Amino acid sequence: MEYRPELVGGHVAVDLVNTVAWRLDERRRVDRIADPANLRRWLTAAGLELSKRITRDELGQLAHCRETAYAVLRALAVGAEPRAADLAVLRDEFELAVRKASLVCAQPLTWRAATTLDELRLSVWRLFEDEDLSRLRQCDDDGCGWLFLDRSRNSSRRWCSSTDCGNRARARRHYRRRQAGATA
Image 1 (cartoon, one colour):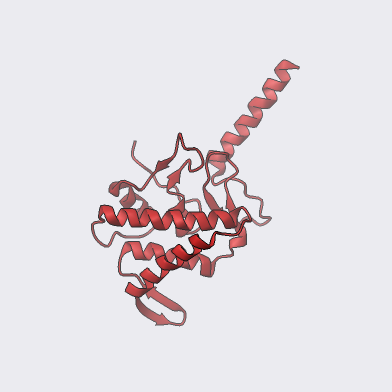
Image 2: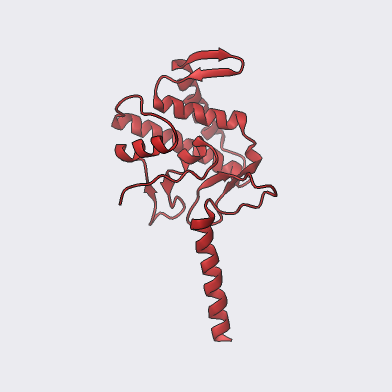
């Protein structure tokens, strides 16, 4: 079955960390962009272009950046303090991207990335700069682990996708209620 990217995070950097399906369930965990064709599909869905053919080394670098961003963002989403080591690695990712980028505008400060990989690194930086990360949440589904920016009016969003994880949770509740009623 062909990979169809789901962009539910509310920001391209959050959607990047969500390219690992079933992140919290080792038995079902899948890296959706480990394959270059899937990476191209994801980039297209996210409105980005692949600047050149991506090498296996660059795929590894992208995965490293994504996993570091996830470690920091997940800590923030669950109300924990990110590890200093993860923050240092993230800083290195930002520095690498900025070192190779060109400055296009001074106000607001706007960078043009040298590569797609660097554009993704800069998008993670922009997430930290531009978004209210107190609205960052982790999906309530036990195995999902996806993150999202909760932009609901009353900050009540619980799932990455109401039609996916939300429906599964409602179906489980309904099944438990029916089972409890049948045994009573």
